Length: 108
Image 1 (cartoon, helix red, strand yellow):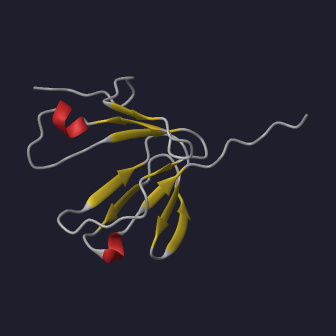
Image 2: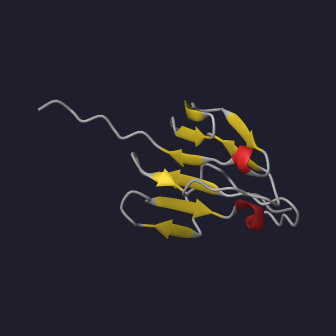
């Protein structure tokens, strides 16, 4: 049996491009999944993950483990919170894009 801890610090890829900074762990592969993929992403505050996109062959899920990301769908933007789980159907109606909120600036 293979186990992956969501709260660990093991990453398979890091993106350093401004506005798109993130870390990615290929969870499905790490636990030996063959038919269900899964990835864990950590985004820098104010950055986004993936351009607005569509999957025609598979559904996609989003589980918010930590933080308060904003989700863009064909219905508009939605603020999510820790523990929220969202499913995106195949095709145009399931097109998601995620971003995190910028960190508040401290008053000087």
